[in-house]
Length: 90
Image (cartoon, rainbow, N blue to C red):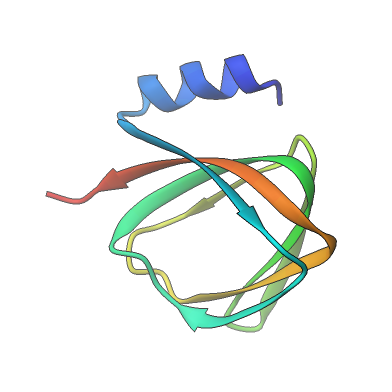
């Protein structure tokens, strides 16, 4: 997906906070966020594991996590950079 189309989609879906995140290669243990997150991979790769299911996302891919959804992250050898929309539950 292209960045401009992604940003338009986020706005239509009510995501008001937009943040660019850069992570070095490595892992982040199981955790959860108090907000819904939808992200477009700009560079590199990220593997997200929810329970026993893991999926790898590359440049141009979009991942979506529900608020408070427990997950683990693994960043590829070159790290990852993504643009994430965040939506807090009311």
